Image (cartoon, rainbow, N blue to C red; front, side, top):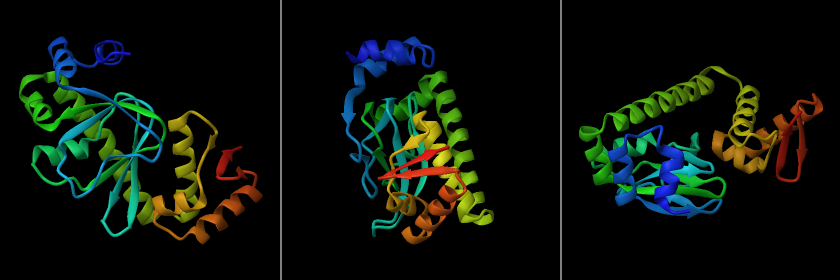
Length: 210
């Protein structure tokens, strides 16, 4: 499908006509496979990915192999954090990675920045994203500070299930441990406990909510 048809079908109720026209003019339609990195840390953000379909994961990384999961991006979303770095002309400090096969529109950051002055619909779009993603980060901080690991693991599985609209998620114990920044052994122990309580069913690299 051509970019103009995608924009018309996905963004006609989100952006005003002139902004849709600029999306067609400057945006580049791209695709990514699972685990493909779309935006990397310590790099200038030359473009902002606007997700058309699929799921991407946003992570905070330190460049030394350590990181923590922040939130997902799905249809008609982009990263408010990435936009903020672009506005301040700073190197990107998050990683955006495809979780599934995704289609996205790569928008040059200079164009994105100009939209704040030109289009009310873009300002509203950014503010809504920023509120949603800030709330997600505050919930993450709250969970780390005040909730036990079992609660965090179950919430992670439930949120992933909602994003994919499927009770079964494809995850290795190592993947969850990395996202929650805890040991793999701790994750395995909690998952076995949840399975014993019949909350989840464990399979090979997959977890099903009962």
